[in-house]
Image 1 (tube, rainbow, N blue to C red):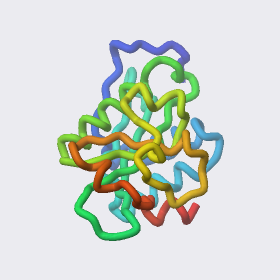
Image 2 (image 1 turned 135 degrees about the vertical axis):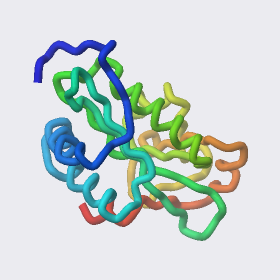
Image 3 (image 1 turned 90 degrees about the vertical axis):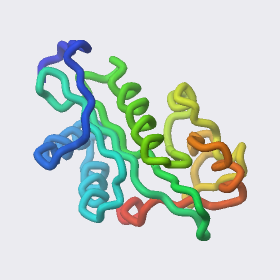
Image 4 (image 1 turned 60 degrees about the vertical axis):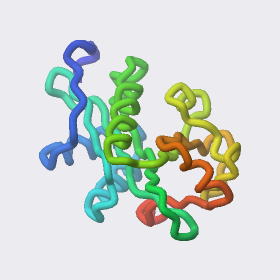
Length: 177
């Protein structure tokens, strides 16, 4: 991949079947391992991905983001998604591609009437999109993770109220890694 990146040529669009191998390779490069790439394949195969977007620049796949179904410890009437994984080609990091992917994923989730999005990620990165500590709203992850890394973004008026006191769970594909 060329190391020059022209933001004017960046497009973000829905992932298509012909993107699958490029997205697999991108996740391998971005994370330096196969786990996230294999996770994306499993989520797709089991049809639990709700939003899957690619970023292209000069006809090269430079970024990918996926939102997939999440569940609570009991049946409640909120629709929640998990943001994971998100990958940007190593040569194109720190250029705003990840931010553009997150903003577009949030927009797509809103259009699907999703109530909240969760992320397990950098506490210095995701708050700029409106994510807050889930613990602050008495929402717990199924995983034992630091409180400041498990965050939620409310997309509806009463989602956090309904989710308060609940444990949220990622799709089973995450625990199969």
